[in-house]
Image 1: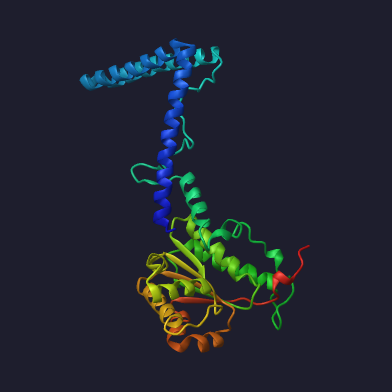
Image 2 (image 1 turned 90 degrees about the vertical axis):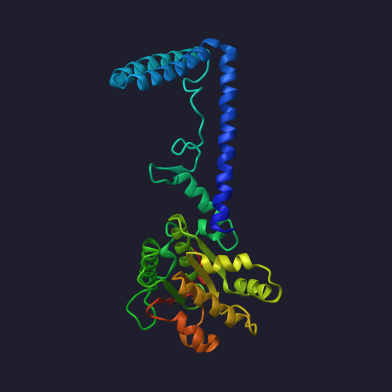
Length: 330
């Protein structure tokens, strides 16, 4: 699901919510009228009073302040009368107030005047929806808030004075700054390299989650999954929409490069085309691999790796230490 598709789906849900709540308001009004018609009479008087004073203010603009003060007093009196009647008949005092799931945006998904922006409720639901998609499911559990540096050994890396835990703390800081500065990063791309179990995928998820919550489109998948889709696209033309999504997403995260099969006229050709298109459009890409840099150059040709390792556009981060998945939890 693309971000645009998710937004459309959520807007349709919000429309259904408004319709449901309007139905609930009518149901409550009918209940109140059946028990105490005087309550509904007071509300109707309030509506008529509002319309009369609005017309009066338009007809006599010089008296607008007096009319407004008088209206507020009379509306307040009718409002209090209705609330007293409601509680007298066993209803909550606010039973006939408008019903909203989100009082902040009134179930429209947007707030702000004159510049509109997504409400917090909409942003949270959008992130959850996108995180439920293929390749994004881990983001709810793996993000900067859940990052636990104590999972990494607090012992020096071989031949270095810094510990693995301290190194991961540094890498986390770099990745969080990258996500917070997005898309105004000096170097648009990141390349994570190092052996398995060092936190590369976790930090990729952290970046994806933060960038998503900031309102940008994110595509995340593994290299084997990418090549599987590209193989089908190459031979049958299926999946053009997915290829377009990976090309146009504000941020593409490609995990586990090197684990995919090398298919002639597919793997190198399409990877090169994808990276070229994203570089030309100045899109951001984060790649992780278990390869060393020399192994990367040997496997992917100089033409492709020159784009991945271009220091002007890519920051290269080395992950070192012990595989934390093999370390028992306390």
